[in-house]
Image: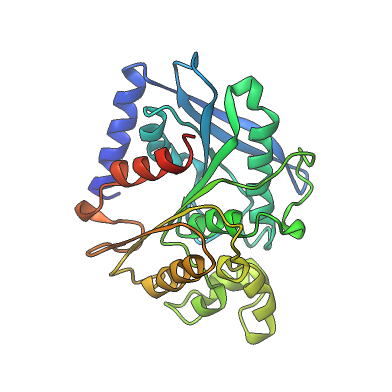
Length: 282
C-alpha cells in the first residue's frame, strides 16, 4: 500500500471519529444472477439540510478484482463537503461476463433514486466516479445512459439510471485498443469470453467512446502521463470526442502520474470538489 492510500485512510478514520461522517456497510441495492448486490454508504452525519447530491463510486481491479471498501476514503472527503456517497460491489469476471458490471452500476443509480426521500438525496443530481476499470464503468454510465440493453433486471426498473456528472480516473475508453497493451488479454478474455477480432463488436459496445453524444453529462477526466497500464492517449481521444460532441469536459493530465496514483502533482480535493460543486450542486 503506498503512502497516499495510507494517508487517505487516516483522513477517513479521523473524520469518522470527529463525528463528521457516517458509514453504513453492506446495504443490499439489488440482485445480480440471484446474488445480493451490496453497497456501503458514506454520508454526512448532519442530514438536516436540503437533499444532498449523490455520488456512486466504482472500484478498480481489472473487472475481476478489487473491493467496494476502496471507495470509502474518496467518498469521505466529499461527504465532509455535503455529498451523499455509495461505493458499490458489482459482479466480477470471469464469473460474470459483460454487461453484468454496467447492469449493476445502473441498478445502484436507480436504487438511489428509489430511496431518495428515505436518504434525503437529490435524485436529479447524481454523479458516477471510478478509477481504472471503475473509471470505465463510471464513464459508460455517462455516455450509455440511454442504452436499454445495459439496464439489466436487478431492480428499481421504473427509475432512470442516467447520471448528471462523471469523474473518470484513468479508465479505458476504447476497449478494443486496450487489448494490445501490457498483456491485458487475459482480463478481456475473462470479461468478454475472448479478445480476438471476433469479439470486437462486443468490446466496442462496452467502450464509452463509442456511445458519445451531445446528451452526455459533464465529465472530469484525470489521467497520469506515465500510466503504463492504460495509455493516456485513451483519455486524450475520449476527451476530444466528448468536446467535439458539445459535452463539457475538464481534462486533467497529471505530469508524473502513473496508473491509479497521481502523486503530489494532483490535488484531488480541489479538482473533484470544484467539479462537483459546479455541476452537481445546483
